[in-house]
Image (cartoon, rainbow, N blue to C red; front, top):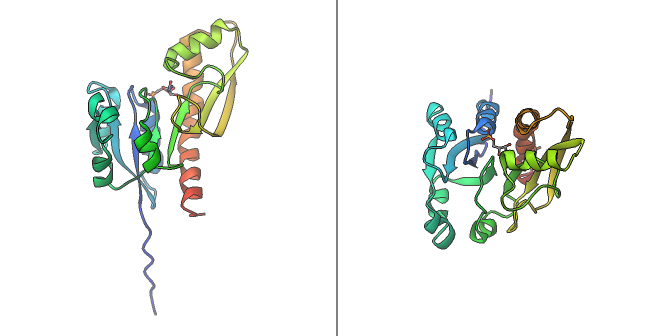
Length: 202
Ligand code: GAR
């Protein structure tokens, strides 16, 4: 009998996150058994961010960004190259991605935003600020947007949206819970679909 050994390339993902990291946790769990996607690096601008505990608990390498080097230096390109990073996922990351990285990773950076863009996006629109704004605007619907990242805040091409209802009794906290549920349900699967499509793996 002849066996043919097919070597599958591993695509290495870096997750950029500034917060508690509930999305990061779901993404790590989703790809744990993947034969072609590895979560190779967790990147944060906050040394005390909860997401770094999640990285350590899963034995994933971490990188803490310094503002000066990220925005005015090499944007950590050599470090990302050293880890063989192919694709960047922003999961609650609050800094803008420098143009340098956007050029190095064309259509290989995606972000999740906790509202239905183009509404309630832009600088300063993150986490509970978004949910407060949605409630103050008396919207009866909110949701999530997963999109490619370009040089403007919350602006790149949309990949996926899902909606949930906003009730008159909702608070920013209850709305945040609904949004997190949507994010956890869809984000890992959409990341997989985008990576499969980008590298013609399906
Ligand atoms: C998520 O809801 C994400 O959509 C939001 O931060 C939260 C991070 O939650 N991102 C933004 O607001 C970006 N503008 P997590 O730390 O539990 O994953």
